[in-house]
Length: 289
Image 1 (cartoon, rainbow, N blue to C red):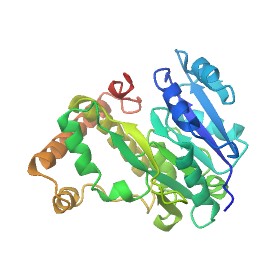
Image 2 (image 1 turned 90 degrees about the vertical axis):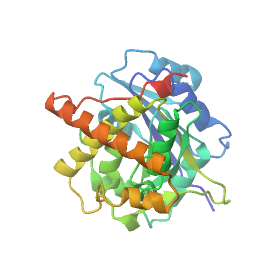
Image 3 (image 1 turned 30 degrees about the vertical axis):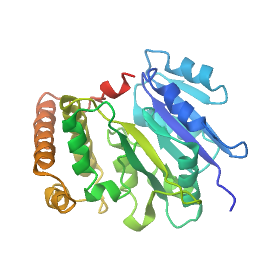
Image 4 (image 1 turned 180 degrees about the vertical axis):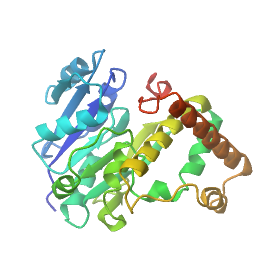
């Protein structure tokens, strides 16, 4: 079967610590016949993100915009793209070209409009509490719903025309993917040869960092639900621990998960009270290589 062409768009705000790693993983073992382009959109950067990308991979199209906006960068990348489908990849996520090709091929069938790879978590530098949290997280329905969570998603040309430009929101993946019904999204776990495909995410090192990340996710999810409702958004807070216990979760892991969720809820509420809910919060520990 002929492989589909595609564009990879990487929004990058002050990602000098990880952009080389992202590009290296993408280009490693890339076949010469693969037809794809990579666009790095450095947005509001105060570091050497753009120059590092240019120096490491001269074939990459690097765009610089002054506004520090992830969704603004994604829209700029869309305007400059030559191919469809378009794959949106976070700069701190590692994806092989084979994984991205599998997403493009899945969309090439015309049966689905959006595709997401399976998430693989790098816990090598994470505390036991963070590891316990993600053991429970992976057993949620959301983890297999193709609604985000892997730092990478692809949308076909028809799908992009349907959703229009990305609005100025935090949860860009949840917004985009929840525009499509369950049967219009695909969770891609294998390539055409049956090999596993995935996006690798370096997890926070500490529970405190995880609470901050989870508070951002909560605010982003609430923003989508409030301003961009969709019948395809999953219900929240129902049966999470029950399904986790049925999957073999220990009581200690469940307590850790519940504790981080509660702390993140309180932090999210505090940020909203202070009017800081729109501020992007990132995990710096996983970028400290």
